[in-house]
Image (cartoon, rainbow, N blue to C red; front, side, top):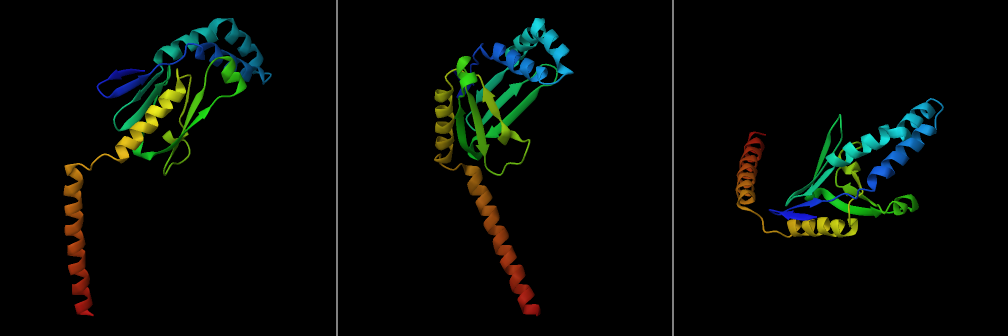
Length: 175
């Protein structure tokens, strides 16, 4: 992880490449139609794909959000505001351990299926330290003093509340 103007960029373990080749290849072999594709996959297409996929992996922890980007032909970018993160789960099974990898799973408030709340990060180097950095940034954001914009919004909300009170009073008088 490197520091860049309050942004931290996670580094990914290069062992994610053979892990992805094996994971996708084994998945292909689970179907009769996929067996010929798996042979082509294991003969070199998988290594080519994994190398390019790895080169495009990016994860950045900013002062207010976490951004993750991946993909070759179709690029997927997900952003989670830190204040929405409820928990970050560290997952490390026997196959992931074999490749010296782990997964971080993000649970967010008010999420729905298919959104950033389903974000899984596999292959981050020193994932435990990155998890701790995310949780620390989230806590710092929660305990940060409120900015001037919140005071302006609060004043506007109080003015709206006063006007609504006046409207309610006028309606009561008409009845």
